Length: 377
Image (tube, rainbow, N blue to C red; front, side, top):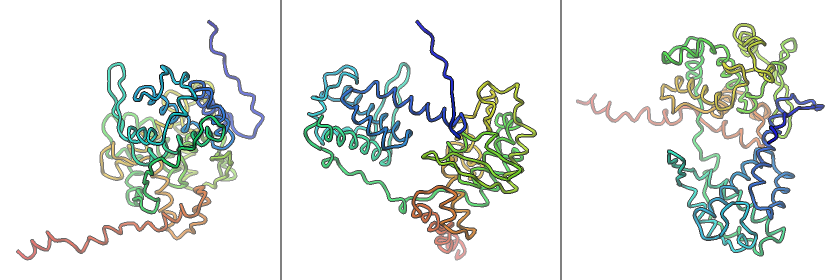
């Protein structure tokens, strides 16, 4: 059996190799899932390829694979034993009620593996995405003449709170300071955490400072390179969604923490795994840090800022919200903040402007029933 062929990159674009390879990895995952799905969906595959971003395409395909597996495992709507064997005739017999039952099933289900049972609980936001994926599929199959009716109008609505209704979770300025103090001094870390902190404290601090200064998305930070930074110009380059290349200015804090990390902690070239030489943030194994590792790091330090458990710490996306609220509270224009954070609609940024820090605390501070009761006694 022939071995797996080595991948060689011939990159003539202006994008760094790691950005090109990341896109290739996502597209390869999409193509792999497509091979598992029935061939009559090829019009749907073509639609996704031409109309949505690779990560969204991957999410849609993952949802459709899950839906097809559900048809096999949980219904009598197909006689197929594998997803690939599901027929267009069987899909033509699916009705809106069947899809609604799938959405209801997706709220809470279990998956049995070799030695464990995994219980899944999904939010309405996740259910809405699954419904959207299946809706797009059936609409495309109807356009292609694969199914005779457009059944999507019969899908049950799923109420997802509007953005303005959601509680905006972000660190307050004093909590950011506690978080940064923890990463600077090792305060409030366990003995085991301090062992790793001694080796990665400058890297971790640089990561947190970048998040709360620019509100970067997780993938934007994870893909940063050493070559992304131009210290003589005081700027660095990030690659955003839709292949947007953006130049970011560096302030003194960012310049200091990045320089400190590069000069005094980042591994020497001989300790870096081949292919990861340009990666800015490295694991202790000399490889580009994974998104999961960065997410765990953020969760740990934000939990210290919040004085809560590690499990209750915040995600990188909430540090993005922290940057937005902090910038607006300092009197910056929402249009300038929109540009910095790359919000497609200013209404998204407006949500942070409408967010009033401590508003609930202010409302209840004069309603100290128990204290007043004790004062009367």
